[in-house]
Length: 137
Image (tube, rainbow, N blue to C red; front, side, top):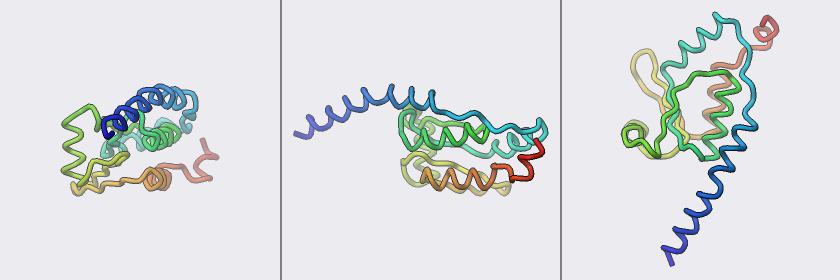
C-alpha cells in the first residue's frame, strides 16, 4: 500500500509542478523602482543572503515573488537537485526544510530563517523603501 501512495504523490507532483511554475511566471510582480545608487546599495546588502529552495514548492514561490517585487538579487540555491546546497542547508540550518534564507552578518555569524512568512517579513523590513523614500523616486 505504501508504494501506491508514494507513486500517487509522485504523479500529483509531476502534474502540479508545471502548473505551479506557470502560475509563478504569470503572477510575479514587477520590481520596485529605485535610483541606481539605491539599487547598488540593495545589491551590496543582498550579497550576504542565500535562499535555499525547491523549484515547485508553493512556499518557495511565495518568497521568490516577494524577492522579485522588492527587486532583490539574492542567490537562489536548489536544495533538491544540488547535493552541495542540500548539505549546506542541513549542516548550517540543522534541517532540510525550505524555503530557508541564510543571512550572513558582517562578523561571519549566520542566521537561518525557515518560514516563508517570516522570511518575507524580514525582507520587507530590511528592503522595502519607506513611504517618503518611495515618493522621491
